[in-house]
Image (cartoon, rainbow, N blue to C red; front, side):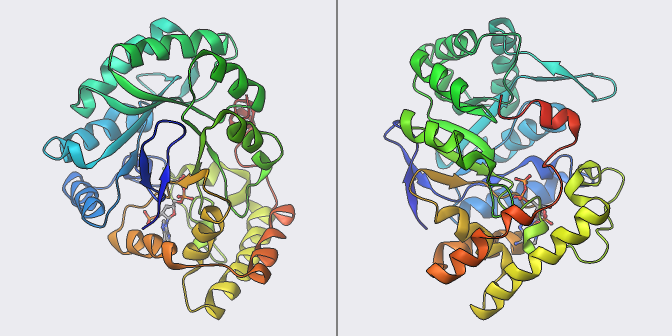
Length: 328
Ligand code: ATR
């Protein structure tokens, strides 16, 4: 277990948290509620504190799940949630991003209720709303801090300028972005901005949505309700090329007698004290493997081998719409 400071809050958290999205949506059918609650309780027993959810995951169902799981152990967990993306209530399709004060205030009340708590430890703008100045959104979020509904503010997939502007309004404790051996585009500008404003970088999809664990081979076999099937890196020749790159991660892992997922997480944690990560899993065995990454130290040679992979990854992180709303 390694604790790291969250932004300038003075709060320390174990560097590996749990991304909870996949328990409700996007990576196949939702986990049965009893099994999901059991996993969340086991995670606490294993020392996990930081649990990451959002209003949009399962259209509220993921927050409700965390509320059920944590109502009698609220003091043991650090809950992060997010608002901004709006979905059609009937179809679930994305209809836009709303970073307005009105939507911020509406969303937080729903999240607090579903989570069954009086305060959200870390509240993010999930995607930046191009129609609302970031100063207005963060100003509204700062009101929530003043009212005691939220303890700290974060931004997700924000660009460097947005991060700097936001930090002038209120301290930004965390920036959550995709970051992994395969996804390093934020190193050029976003991470320097995080360091400048004192925000922790919370790395999501540190396992490349599972790909870096080596679990995907010749055929991904993704079901219809698996969002990954729609993403470029899991399609066609990009998929084959990317899975071949994972062989190189597996080779590093087998030489160290550990799991590729542990190599992927050790790489992320090795980027510095300003980084935490929230790998997602629905399975206790995988959670234990992931927490084993605390004990893995990469040599300079291993690091250099892994550092060479990102440039060879094929395909964007998201489809066209998804790409248009990141780094905003
Ligand atoms: P995200 O942040 O989007 O959740 P991620 O953390 O990069 O993405 O990867 C999550 C995926 O990796 C999930 O599909 C998860 O599947 P399970 O629920 O079956 O575990 C998979 N995953 C997580 N840890 C894993 C491990 N140690 N070995 C294999 N797959 C793992």
